[in-house]
Length: 136
Image (cartoon, rainbow, N blue to C red; front, side, top):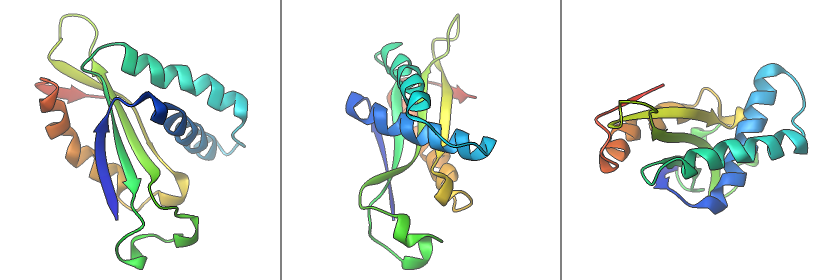
């Protein structure tokens, strides 16, 4: 089962950066490296630092629910981040518009609807931060 959490916790930044790096490397059919993670951490931090209204929307595997929810149950760990979105105010004259800067899903969970779940939760999370809309 997945829990979607809106947060500004900086201690999640490294986990989110690792997920981003892993997903990007998998997409590009290369091996992720610690250097790639180190380069991704500042990207994620920059979103949170850009505004008090910036946030991470994090999908966490809670370890509960139907065993058929995942094709790779052995890869699951309780409270493991499986997806995330990083949102900040759009630069320029559209201060009430949020921008979804990064969206990532752990490769072993691709095709299971984790990004969709985040995107469904995104409008309410954005409204809490006084965004009228969110763009990619």
